Length: 114
View 1 (cartoon, rainbow, N blue to C red):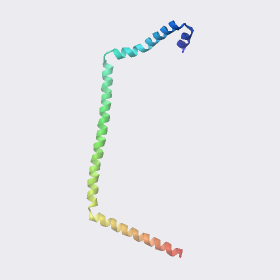
View 2 (view 1 turned 90 degrees about the horizontal axis):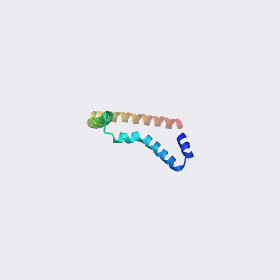
View 3 (view 1 turned 120 degrees about the vertical axis):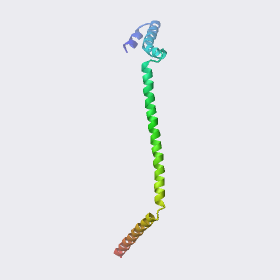
View 4 (view 1 turned 180 degrees about the horizontal axis):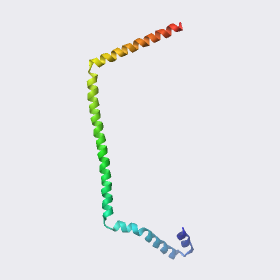
């Protein structure tokens, strides 16, 4: 902020050149990094990012394979269960008993009303 205040007190042309000097000093490390060849840090950073991307892709692939396998197994298991007559008969018996209880409860409720 002090630089900006000091620039306001100078004439226009020297102020502009000082501004350009400050701009060059502040941006020179960025340009130097862009111009320089890749160094050890750049290679290690790229390697680290590549490892992370590979790990994330591998986990996503494993989750998809696990989901597909689980779906296939569930389809086979429930498909086999749906064809079993014993299970069908048991569920039918339970449903029949439940309907009897509902009818008895309805009858008791109606008789209490009368």
